[in-house]
Picture 1 (cartoon, rainbow, N blue to C red):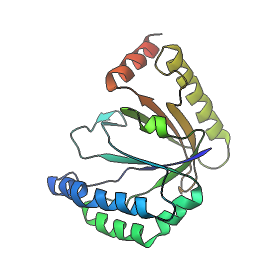
Picture 2: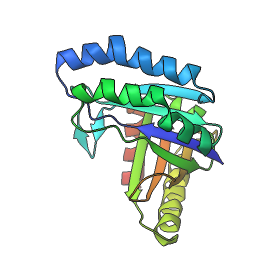
Picture 3: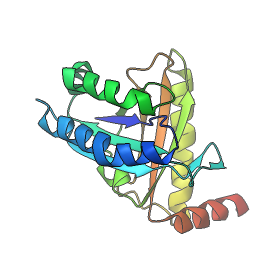
Picture 4: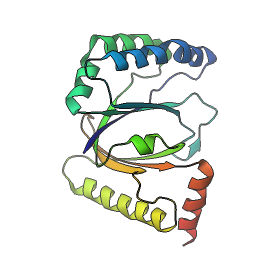
Length: 193
């Protein structure tokens, strides 16, 4: 099992926020992650293009993906004075406070996050294992169908798991793609077949 974190900050979309995040906030965040007593194993930053089927490619929508050695390392970072300082710095540029999401995933996310395009599916599952099992089974069928169509070859470009720290428990499935064209090609193949 791996400990995978997602953060999708709700930043304002104005040019000042984008410039501030790029020149001040991101470098500060990278520094406090790198210098933390138990830093993440890997960290990735990306831009969101589609959200709930809507094109948001023109907006300043970011996603951060991290892999932690242990859930306690994540908890230690989130409780740290440096992270509290970061939250204070980012709040004037945010529509809402950042909510780090920690998941216990089946594999390390390095190959997924290292893909040119990452597709993330999230489902609120509540308490108990019923919806988690249902989500996992549906995900496995989807990934198998993509693999059969030639889109994923079982090389670790897919992860799934359940949240560990959210008020409303969630399941997440993440698929790595070479490009948006490849994603579209294989999703169309699945729709037609």
